[in-house]
Image (cartoon, rainbow over all chains, first blue to last red; front, top):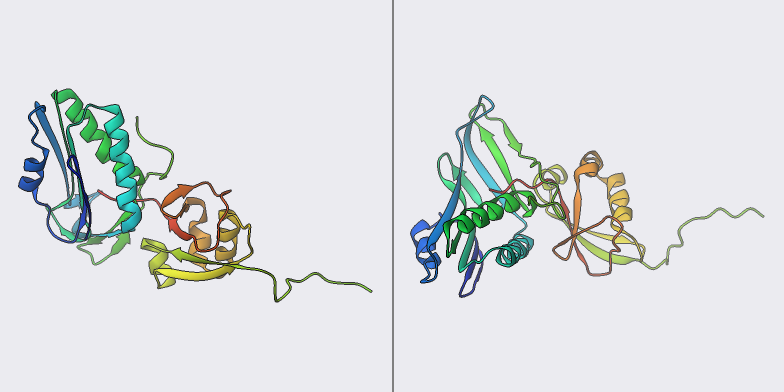
Length: 154
Length: 94
């Protein structure tokens, strides 16, 4: 487990399940009119193949650094009161959550936009990889389409 | 007299730790390597050197991004003694 928690930003890599209630409570703020949270979950079917589980591996120290960079960028671009990025490592079974990102902002449009930015950017640049185990017994490391580094979705 | 060039056995080298993940870690069978390379080497030189010894690095060469001390760098970046270098294949978090 690796964690960075300040008054307004909570970043976590954990082997355990993600605590949605704790995150929602963290995000509440008297100046926020909206909290937007996104949970990424393990999908059972992909291109006709059945998934049993996903296993996540992280370059933990850099993942925390890179997530911190993303939260700083989000903070520059939107009026964010509080922000959370939590990611699981290890096995994540079908329908379980691997990632939770959330923000609270004064108005809801910014909450949706900032939350979207965090998950889209995480998937492009944060050094975490998933290995998909199929019902057939086949196992494969998923190669993302992100190039990492400089390119980020606007 | 004809002299052939060769690398002197006492040429200075720098020591680098390379971190590996996902397909590269699985292909090589370990999560880290310690290697010695000439000072002033770039990330490109490093990848060239590793590609000669490790087929899985060779085959993934075009999609490997290099990170030095937890920051993505261009391949032209210089690698320094004691750097923590990571070979990052396309990420798939979330």
